[in-house]
Image (tube, rainbow, N blue to C red; front, side, top):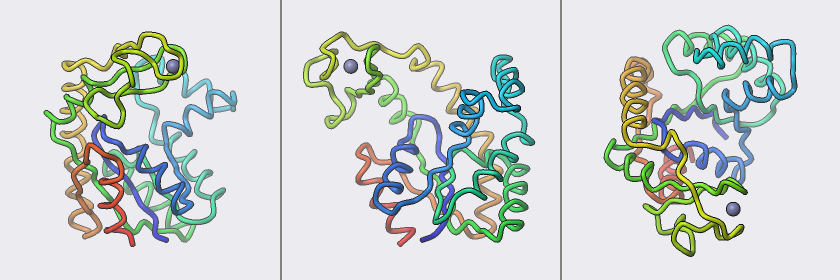
Length: 214
Ligand SMILES: [Zn+2]
């Protein structure tokens, strides 16, 4: 099995695809945002610094993220999929150093692309249950609630998440696409980048990923 990095704009099914790799091929899923969240909830010595940066609306420093990532990579055995990191060339170079130190390497960088208008349809269709947090999507037949606007499980009214509005999403999408461009060029020049289009249905996207990695 080969190690993978997923890069994708917000609203793609990146974490769903990571979960599918875990279930089908026993990958380790390393998500840097989960690592940060865990530091905070475990109240580790780094928790305060991380909380301060997040509360101030800042990104957590490369130094902290890199440190957590290195610890995690030492803990796991077997193939891994890295999600949410690197986001820029500096982080990519940090990652190369850590991997080299630990005799690891990345085999595939997969960019899961989504067109802005398709992404907006998904974002606008997203509904969440305020009680059980189950996510629905009216833009996707598989993810529609059985009854309009009602949670299948709790039978209460579904809500729209406040950050799921078109303007806010467009902004996040454009920032992401601009910021990620140099990183994609960097990986493309190294000949390790694959680009796929995210399908509406997770199984279709997963098939595309399997074609690359198997
Ligand atoms: Zn519910």
